[in-house]
Length: 173
Image 1 (cartoon, rainbow, N blue to C red):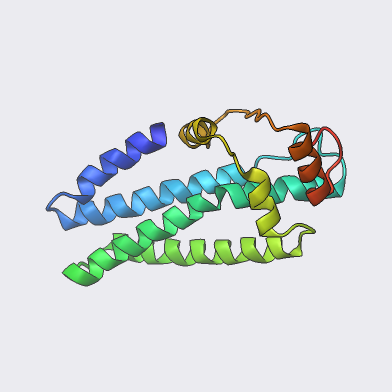
Image 2: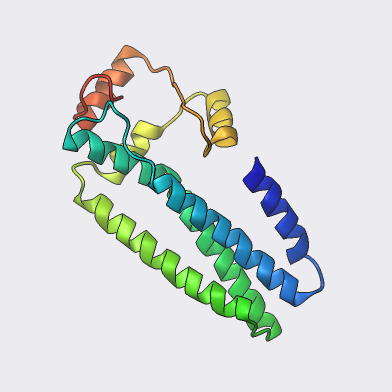
């Protein structure tokens, strides 16, 4: 919720008539997404992930699930740079936005390359992350990312399918 509140406050500044504050705000929102992504990616696998395969599964799920944060950060930098191009503003914030966008683009490409090396396809990981009930999806979107542990009920058949698709050990999924 705090991220959304901060984004809302920065959005107000972006809509202001002062181009300096608008550029700074666009950069700051993009940076918030980038930093949140970085911090989430530092979360180590759970204690249940004992094998290398389980750790790779954890890595894959985390990166597929939270890639949207990098995408949002890149989009904010693009919008900030577009503002500079449209208005001719060439402030330090534009230079920062350009450097940050390049860094996020590199991070995204590195992440995609690493995911390709895993024994799971992105499609399989995305299917595993599917939350089928609309209320659960809404709660998940509202609460994540955050210091929250999600327990999602799946039928025994769904769990068996997921375990088979991912080759995970019992208790990991």
